[in-house]
Length: 165
Image (cartoon, rainbow, N blue to C red; front, side):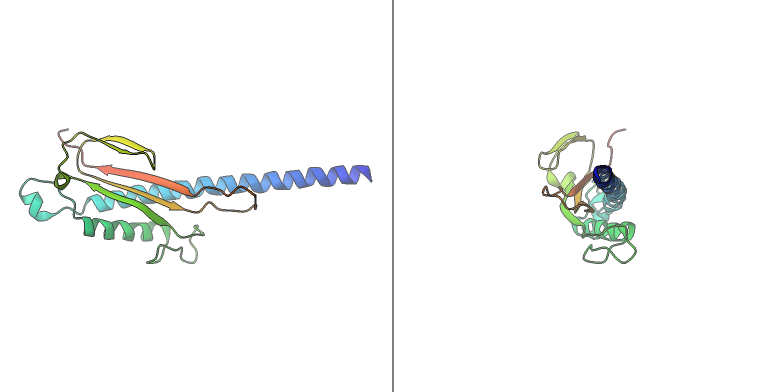
């Protein structure tokens, strides 16, 4: 009987460790997907230049068009609906939130290179030209219920036009 109890205990530890490893692997996969989608979305958003300003030799990103393009790109790349909730068949399980969307360009009055800092999301970068900065997040996948709540997966991305290269 002692052997059966020990075996059951070892089996329980093994199964718990296995689920923990699967949960961590799912976190890695989701973070990688979010990072790729966010990189693509800020790139797409940075292409929304004001043609009037461009004709005057200034690079100014149209904020409304850029934000719309950013959302549409996220929807397309992550399989999300208009509310940024996952569609059927998407790898994601929870809604994606856009927690930061920022544009730094000639209209903001900064001179490049410019040190962009956001301590909330851990972004510190010298940007060389007009840029789109975005941070998205989604909830951590949960396979094992624990007393400690997992922090959300938070993914920043920066896309810049390099001036003078």
